Figure 1 (tube, rainbow, N blue to C red):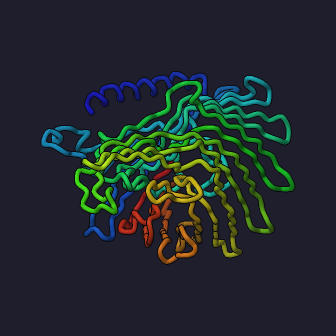
Figure 2 (figure 1 turned 90 degrees about the horizontal axis):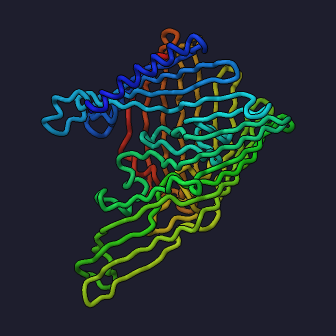
Figure 3 (figure 1 turned 135 degrees about the vertical axis):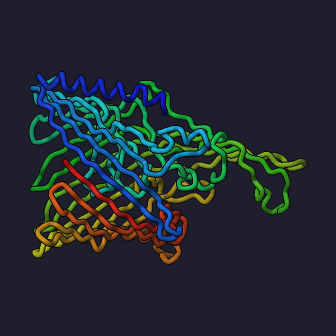
Length: 460
């Protein structure tokens, strides 16, 4: 951490110097926020699930037909990361922190052609019409470091061309190098539970090569017809979550001959990131006084075959089997509506088939890839006291994995909260995350992680 600090501080100073020297030529605009977030488990005897602060800085420097924009996060973790005695004399262990460049790009207008804009650098490129979840939004990799923050993604180092020839906008995106999703520390238990307990040194992760052939690209056509915004998109890239390619294991003693793999010991697992092509469509508009939107994405995955090799004790021969876990096209889709009542109460409802981490039309028992489930996302909010208090009594989701056995395959997430804005720029929020689930869906892993949270935010 000391070595890291030695070069980070001079780097920040150099950036600040560069920004100041550029101010003579470009108008520097910036804003930011400081947020404190404290979360307490309701079933762990007062244990904090998270405590920390975040400083978000968003600069923008326009200059003639171009501008620079970005976003930087400085996270100050409130829980010490001291693991050994020597950590007690290290500032970075007592006060752990990390710096993230979420976005940093340059945008040039009318370049290289008239009515064409070029954006180069790390950027968020959201596609789709959905709120928080969008089946057609697949360019940026998932950011699941805090898995309960739905919809968060990492920026992609990309080139984006936007062309405005007339009533139709054409957007082309090129991502030279693949970037995987950022996963939580317990990602194996969450996304590949059949590998739970396997030590990290026995997992081989095969990233795509940084070559031209492994690049991703996409194109989107967008326009407006009859008061509705519509778009058609195509993306060729890779899943940002890994899948098992080869599994090796052994059985030292067979105690149950009808089930010789009962005492299976995993020795090595090879993971990779399959390729997929996605064809998407979305629209958004108004129907009367209500907003409506919908989108659908058809996924065409490459054929994914998992090879399992098991060594058995003599005199039993070893076993090798190949299982096709993904090869057929499948569809994710979403429909949503929102409405503001005459008294100012706002209501939002979405039906989603397939969350971002899910793929395939059906779940295979031995190779857990999370087939697409059905979700209802909802929110009801009301602002009172001249905008000083916002109450969200109803917010969350209902997930159903199997409609023929709902009582055994469901998840309910409720997140009511109340926010207070005592003065301009200041916000205090008190809320609860409550989860009830049955079955083996992703949300069932969090059934004991109910939280009470307090958050304050100062925006400037």
